Image (cartoon, rainbow, N blue to C red; front, top):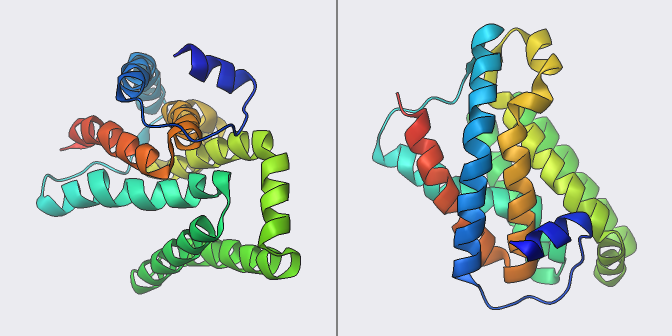
Length: 216
């Protein structure tokens, strides 16, 4: 817990450690302790300003597979995979991005297609222009910024879970995504200290109670 707080103030790459599940259990409980009251604030704001959560789920095997097992995998690869840039994480990033792009295109999600296309093209240009080694150096040098940015982007992504008055959603966007911002910071720490597999597992564990809370 103390390690996380110190990391939060001064993010550093360090070395990947063997997963400490006791420490991660403490982080999970800490997240619940923070997220529950934040969720209450989000609920109050939503009800006060007629903002609806567009992600309420119907219980099914498909729901469990997507929310608990599939979403954490692609979200961790896309948002935190590159915090430790390597040939493997770069390949995973591109393959995952292309898979999501294909699914978005099939489902007619134009905005997702545009955003993913820009991200993948931008990464491809950087990769071929700068090269993997140089890109790794830049990523390591700017790790602190990448950590905070990846956490912020992860949080901002979840603003699209809400529907209603667009102006009200924009005004209260920071409040609405506070639980995800906190989760992004924790997941970034877990990914950096214990590896990508550990952050995926942690994300799955967190998503299970969240999924239960969103069931109709």
